[in-house]
Length: 475
Image (cartoon, rainbow, N blue to C red; front, side, top):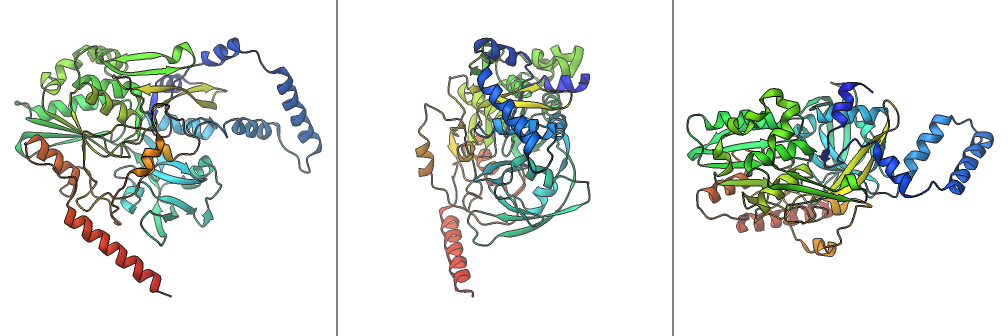
């Protein structure tokens, strides 16, 4: 395995579809704890030999072994998986901020791929793909019963080639057919700008290797000669990324040495506490300049009035940052309850270019609360738009075989009622039509904050019911 790949996989990833921690020792620890089941392994060998000898068509050793490995994960949680050569390579590319495809984070629901979040400024985002969309067909092929890996492979391809997705969207009776042109996806991790009245706006789209130093640069540029009067950190539709990056970002806003997040699992190496020590987490990224991190950011970022924007697309690393800033009363969290992906995955290499991704621990906020299923509940709930929420979004609780949270009653999630807005175009985060951003500005400036506009919600609901009635009358 190349040095570059080892370095990348040695990081902890806290993404919506899975987090990573290279830990070759896990296998040895597990084996020392329990002896190998020799009788069952002999039974496996007998089945392997019978298929090789008697199946109607020849089957290669590689295929049998690979399929057997994949089968071991069928009843585990949705974030544990076998990584073939393609998935292994893709994982490295994602952490470094570039990969080929459409630009969507997907999970699985009822045996079909479901969009967790479109990535900003990508073909999928521009085509109108929304979080919560169920992909029913890919180039005419039904996705029902298709594995997530197979769906991803179908959606990937050479840049400038097109693909047709059939979409089922909550709130719409008829499916949508979208033609999307593939492209090389380069995710710009950090964006920023100054808003009116000296309020700084910073958006993190994904937690990558360069996110923390990029954040430092943006905060420095925003401050200029005079510190802003308020700060808005936008983590909406951020599916996660590297844990080290999430801790470094948290460290910029928190006091030194406070607890950011902890992990708990079955094996000793899974039980850890991560504290706000930015120099430790940025040493690999800033070299000898790591110790200048706090000085470059400036003291204002630890005291300026602050709002963190979140929604259901905010997952894992995003939830770690939001939870830490909320628990330490450093920022007010505004928006919708987050995704609820609170588990840690470890990557065990099987060969130079394959491995397995195995859930080994859970994340806990500084107050000791599990993120799993519950996510982070905002201090102030605000809908996606003045007309209501855009979609009835999938969360961790909607994924099949998800880990349960013993301290939380999942039945309460079904009681959440959301007014759904039927739109075909996603508004721009940080733009003039961004309702949640407007409410964050209102909060920082001491004006009333609205969850939505009741009149517009009622109007939207009436229009939606009229459209459904008209569609039913159409022969």
